[in-house]
Image 1 (cartoon, rainbow, N blue to C red):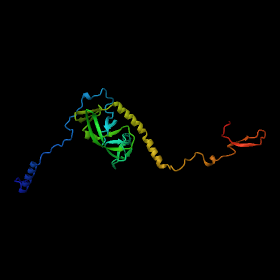
Image 2 (image 1 turned 90 degrees about the horizontal axis):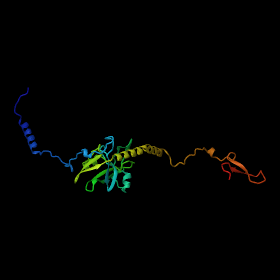
Image 3 (image 1 turned 45 degrees about the vertical axis):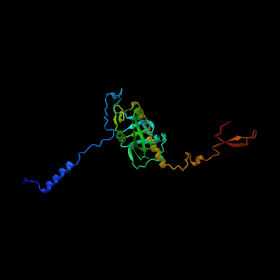
Length: 263
């Protein structure tokens, strides 16, 4: 049986304390990120003349990385890291000796293979034109593997630039100091990268086979001839023929290799 009554002094004090705490605690305020004040929209003005196979083309853009213009930067919203390849760094004359060490292994970069990056490097990345551009510092994992791309920018780059992609129009929009920056991709460029990937993927099996051969082959041993030792011995009966060396005496002959041609 429940009886109605006044709350005890202890309960009343607890309720009063909770009410006072609610009054004294300031309301939560949103901590806005930089560049979040700029609205980004897409409309028919962004629509390309033609969209072949909507959604099938990768978003591959031009960007400036550490002062070098890269024409094949893959914008991959499915990646949790930014990647750059050793071939790209070598072309930029960047040394690989001073990379920051990391011990992270990740999958999905190359088929059926786990990748251990050589290290990490921080580089300036610029999107836009001289009259309106954004520059941000991004951390890249360095991978020693062939690729059809110069670099891959993942979610860390999207977040840093507050960038919004449109995979149907192949465009990326970024808040800039003089308005929204629009970076356009190319369906032709995407198709070319797909073809390059097919060529590179064909070599994956060859790389694996060469690695297995290196593990199982003793390079200190000389190659074994296909002929056995008895077959390699010189036989005077089978491998030579007699030639008369005296103009009138037929008994004076010399043995000459049967493999020699007549002059």
